[in-house]
Image 1 (cartoon, rainbow, N blue to C red):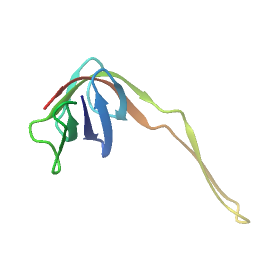
Image 2: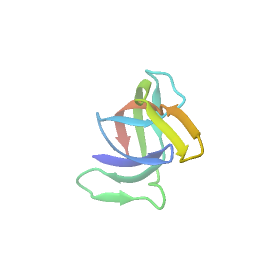
Image 3: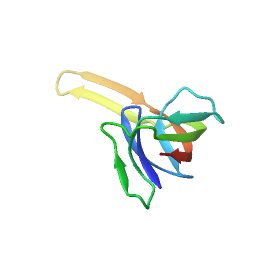
Length: 104
């Protein structure tokens, strides 16, 4: 059984017990969150339910494990012969969730 959910403008394949790294959500570690934006769902036997745009009545429940940030990347801009240089770093935040129950 799996489902494709949409959160943070991105799509993720969710299976029971899987850990997903999703864009940061506003929830404390240990809290339970529900994703109602299910785009596709499959229970294995009955086939696949494709939403238009979402599957009615489907939801995915997950537990927030932790919040973290990705490794730092360096953004460097320059223009030749002009002395223009800009150096900037960036670390994107994310939330780790463990998928619990998938209801159709």
